[in-house]
Length: 620
Image 1 (cartoon, rainbow, N blue to C red):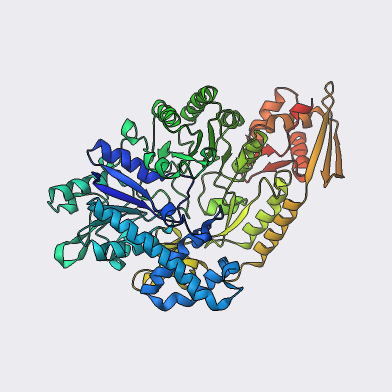
Image 2 (cartoon, rainbow, N blue to C red):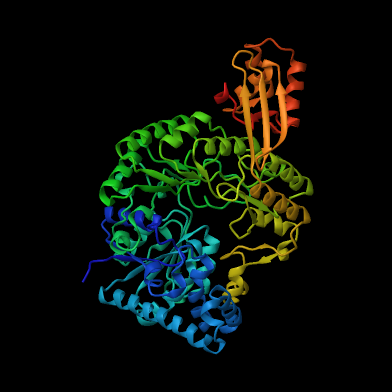
């Protein structure tokens, strides 16, 4: 029998090629405080023999559907919806002979029930008294099903749900699911350790534990503790925050190819900006970063221990608030990559504000393979309305520079249907698409149109309720598939998000149509620069056919292009820089800048910050 103080169970729809970031850190943290844990990868256990999950890119709803179907057996009002999803997700299994639909579906359910029994037997045989689940990515739904069956057989086991964004969501989940004994919101390490200590002492002083929902004895009344102070957040500069992936490699090493495994690491938690109107990812967290020395040592330890070289940062913004420190971190990563040439950062999220071309080049040298910029919009007015830190120039410059340095851009989402969205914002977005004509393609880089999702942890929900527009936000795929009590017995925004139920604005249809045009149309250009006179001949092509030819016979044009190809500059600052190299009248300078804007070769924001759309210096 194993000595396990708490068993963490990772449920679908979590990724199979990524060890659990949160549970792997909790495992190390608990061990440091004297508690032994084990992580059971239920996402493998429940999908290993299922024909539905042979595809590499199983969607979240596909992974959840069998669990939702079993929950539906407990609350049968959604059976019809569940059946249609089965038929449409996997028509090859059902449509050849419709009469066997129920038989096949029940066979799938029976396999899942066998896995549930195996899990319960493992808990019982090892005398495990504490079970932990995460609510992230709607794992709360399969966790609710498994926990229901665990409690029926093992009523004395403590079941804990973590990862909740705020106390309201955690409270409402506990209200609907009496099989759960505790729920933790926000950062979980210290609350979980204190909870484990309290359970071990059997003192029931749960009110002193930060960020926890618990049941008050036999009365079963839900109680909520406080948020806690700074002392209830983990000190990153400690070696016991290095994740332990042992349980993952015991399961997956012979299943997932080594080169496909991605190890999650975090440079920091929270967000240095944390003001975006639509975002909720940093609720319950304090912003801080690990020291570079500790993080480099962490990466080296993980490489040596697991012989795995692909990593991704879990941060909302890997850059953080100190650009000097981030550049130092990149310098150390470059040295690490020289030591381990296979080391690669497969994904990281960044805030593009103030990131120089030199820093982006360093990111490429440091092993960054792809990044997510946090784009949200290509309208300056809309970015200001949703209170983003960066503007259209910041985003465009980063994307152009990253692609030029062989860094892929992923997850470039365009959010639509925000509460204050106007037609002028959409028109601006359509107009600015042309600036991206050399970057957009079907294969490498594109935008994805995403309707705004609103839940109880969204800042926008208050605005929507104040405008009496709450009923306009009622579309949710998960709502169709799960018991109505999850949206009627509690605030329906607590456990899932909703999108606008009105028809998409015609202008967004136009944006989508224009985007499809740029993705399938190849725009390119050539530049020839006379090295003596610095005269510039520019030619632009569409699908390899010449569509524009411009000759700039004044050195000023070259200087404008040269200064702006690897930086963002305010118009006044740019004039000062150029005037040191070529004495020029400001009005003439403005005329030339405007000409280049009108020719779609420069892009300028409302504050007169400029950058170039093309690269020119390599042609001298």
